[in-house]
Each structure stands twice: as C-alpha cells, then as structure tokens.
Amino acid sequence: MDLIKARDVLFEYIRRDDEGNVEGITTALDHVSLDVKQGDFVCILGHNGSGKSTLAKHINALLYPEEGSIWVDGINTRDDEKILEVRRRAGMVFQNPDNQIIGQVVEEDVGFGPENLGVPTSEIWERVEESLKAVGMYEYREFSPNKLSGGQKQRVSIAGVLAMHPKCIVLDEPTAMLDPKGRKEVVRAVRGLNQVEGVTVILITHYMEETVHADKIFVMDKGKVVMQGPPKDIFSQVEALKELRLDVPQVTLLAYELKKRGLDLPDGILTVDEMVDELKKLKGI
Amino acid sequence: MIRDITIGQYYQTDSVIHRLDPRVKLLGTFIYIIMLFMMKNPAGYALAFLFLILVIKLSRVPLKFILKGMKSIVFILFITVFFNLFMTPGEELVRFWKITITDRGVANALTMTVRLSLLIIGSSMMTFTTTPNELTDGMEKGLRGLKKIKVPVHEMAMMMSIALRFIPILLEETDKIMKAQMARGADFESGGLIKRAKAMVPILVPLFVSAFRRANDLAMAMEARCYHGGEGRTKMKPLIYKRRDAVSYIILAVYVVLVFFLGRHAMFKVW
Image 1 (spheres, each protein chain N blue to C red):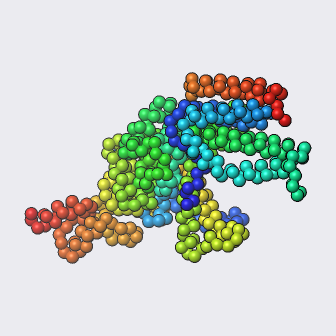
Image 2 (image 1 turned 60 degrees about the horizontal axis):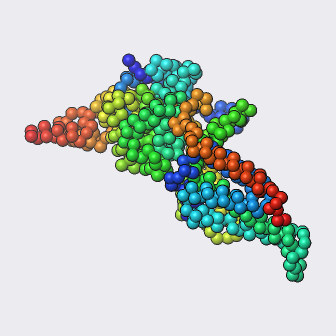
Image 3 (image 1 turned 45 degrees about the horizontal axis):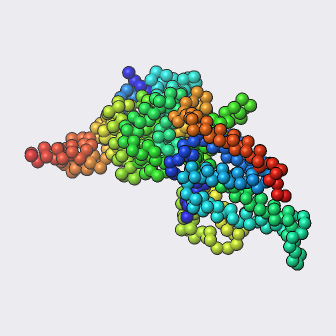
C-alpha cells in the first residue's frame, strides 16, 4: 500500500504589493503526482526553487494544496480534524538545527512531541530513551543543545520526530548546514532508521552521494516531477541531469567520461566498489 | 566576551534546596520578600538573616560565589545609603558645612542596606538553586488557577522557556554580526556614549531580521511536532509534591508567624 499519495497537487505563492494587489504568482508545485511505498527510502532532488521544500511541507500538512490532494496513510491532509494524526504519522526535520530544538536539555526536547500527543509520563521516558538510542545520542541526554555539534543537534531533531512513532520521516535538507563529518553522522542515522526500524524516509537533498542507496529518486524542476526511478536509472542519464543543473555522484561522472572515451562500462555506476568491480572485469582479473 | 553574561545564574550541585519543588521556592522567595517589608525592628531582620543563613547552608552554594554576585549591587547600595543618610529630616547628630546627618537618616540608611542586601541575596538564592526550566514549570503549575480568569499561563510559561533557550543563540549571533561589521571597518569602541549607541544600529537590524526568521522556523517546527497549546498535553517531568516540600511549607509558615510575632513587637523597637 502507498503510504503517501499525491494527485495533481498545485500550490502557488502569491506576491502582493502594499495595497494587496497581486504582483506576481510563483507556481511552486505544478500538478505534482507521486506515490511513496511504506518502508521505502526515497530521495527528492532538485535545484533551488524547484518546489521540493514546498512539497515536503505538504506531506506534513503545514501547507495545503490549492488543487488536488495528498493522502498520508489514507488520511487527506485537508481534513482539519485529523491534522494532528497526519503530523504524527509524517514527522519533519528541518534544515537549521538551532531553529527546531525547543527543549533546553536534549531529553526534554525529544519528549516535546510525545508531550503534545498526550502520551502518559512513563511512556514518554521509554520513547525518549529508545529514540535517543536509535540515533546514537543517548549518552548526551542531559546535555544542553547549545553544547552539541551541528550533526549531533540534527540527530537530536531526528530523535524528537522518532519519539512520536511516525510511519514516515520527511527530512528537508537536513545536512545543508553541516560539515562533512556531521553530514555522514546524519546520513548514517537516517539509513539506520530506515533499515532497522523500518521507517519510511523521504530525504530532500542537494548532495548526490546521499541518494545512491535510495530505493527511488524523484527529480523536480520548476514545480514538476521530471524524472523518477531507482538511482541507477536516474544517474545513467547524465546529460539530462546536467540540463537540470544537477550533478551526478563523482564515480558516476568518472564512469560516464571513461565510457565516452571508449571504455566498455555499463551505465549508472554509483559506488566506488561497483566501479572497481567493473574495471576488474574489463582487465579480466 | 559577550558570552560571559549569564542571566539568572544557576549553581550546579546536589542539595535539599536544589531538589525542592520549584513552586515551594517561588512562593518562599515571594513571602520572604514581603516579610522583609513587614518588619519593624532589628529582631525581625536578625530573624530574616538567620533564615537566609539556614537556606544558604542547606543549599551548599559557596558563600564566595554568593558574595561575588553582590559586587554588582554595591553601587546601588551606596546610592541608597547616601540619599538616606543626608536627605532624611530628623534630629540633628552631626553637622558640617551644609550637610547634616540626622538620627532618622542613620537609622534609614542602616535599614535600607540590610533590607536590600537580604532581598537580593534571598532572591538570588532561588536562581542559584533552580534551573530556568524548573522555574517556568513551577510558574505554569503554581499559577494554573489563573487560567479560570483567562490568563494564558501555559503560553506565558512556554514563551519564557523559549526565550531562555534562545538567549545563548542570539548572543552568539550578535557576536558574529559584530565581528562581521568590525571586519568591514565598523568601530564600536571609540567615541562618546551617543556615538557608540549609534554604532549599535547596524548590529540590531540584522539581529532582529534573523530573530524573526528563527521565530518563524521554530513555530513551524513546533507545529510539525503536533504542538497545539496546553490542552491535552502531558508532562515528561511532572511536578509532584514530596515530603520535603511539605516540611518546607511548615518551616515557611513558622517563619511568617515568628516575623509577625517578634519582628513587629514593640518590645524590640529601637526607633
């Protein structure tokens, strides 16, 4: 069954001048339709202004479609009475770690979501413990968030969402403000959640290296989904991606360039290991 | 340097006072301050002093640490003494040139010094032994009766705790902006008061813009985590009165009775 189903979603940002007259309309989502299966690791790629963050906010019912509908676990996000249900099922992690941590102590922040849901006290503590352990931050439970590194803060944010027992986590460029080390920590934690806990992950990112292990990639441009498929299919279309001003992972690019010069390599090599294997095959080792 | 500023300092240690319910400490401090203004004779102040010594001993906050905090108020104390000593009319004690010191003046100066010192040490004992979080929790629960007359207690407590959480973040940001401006030749150190105040404008504008952006992000993050006001909300760390809290309330009551009995008794009246 599809956990998230979007049909013909249209959303426009309307700019108004001081008198309230419409100055211009930006179509952020232009009749977007997509399906995400339960348990999948899905990535959404796209250039700045392609509408990917707007889409993420639709899944969490922070924004509503003007036309079309989105269903999360069978609930229409426009159903006002079930809005908390939607938000509990689809958690969201934002870009800036400082602006989404509410508690003054790590464990209190993780407990914020369950508190809002009215979970009994003893169960809150259980949930906080298991969520912090799942992202490897349990030893830091009594720290002030101000004393953590960016990657650690982002893992706390993920734990905060996890404590609400969501079916799906939407991460809106969670690594954009982090250093390479923090980026690795966060990606490892997110993959762990997907593989060990079976949480559906929707990762929005600029970094191609984070997408190679995804089950499915959606590429967005100007409010439309222009490509979708497994990473191998997407990254074998190097020319098409370049036209969308998107990169491909370095190894894929190398394989592509080598192929152009006449080496007999297959399309869509994503990891260094794959590349090594293929090159060995060529040399006959 | 700007990060050294600490508001409502907390002294981390483990003591009975630290473990007390914040509601007890809030009410206790409030009553202690009121009592300071109810006293009419030295016996009352001696009582208040002894009570404070007891709290300090129990709290295990070093005396040195407490007195360090007093340094900043010496100036205020000095001004109070100065005005009371020279400006109070009464029977003349000493006189030189145009300045007279009266008996009432000496008495007033003394009382004000003692009262102010006790007041400031007494209320800072609360911030030394209670984390800001406990304070907001205590306020929210202690004042929840006011909800009936439509006082948004939960919202106020939430605002306070968010403000406290963002103090270090905004301080860091101020530091960053100042450095960025200094790198481009801004001068914050020279010139008179007005010139320096004017130099702060280019810091405040970007700081406000960024604070609003942060507030917007935070509101969205809170909504995404199902925040919908205080209704139907449970607590991760609920406040529950223990035996030590009951004992403290009794001690507090005894103190109030003693102050009313001795601190206002005519027998000890000196002036």
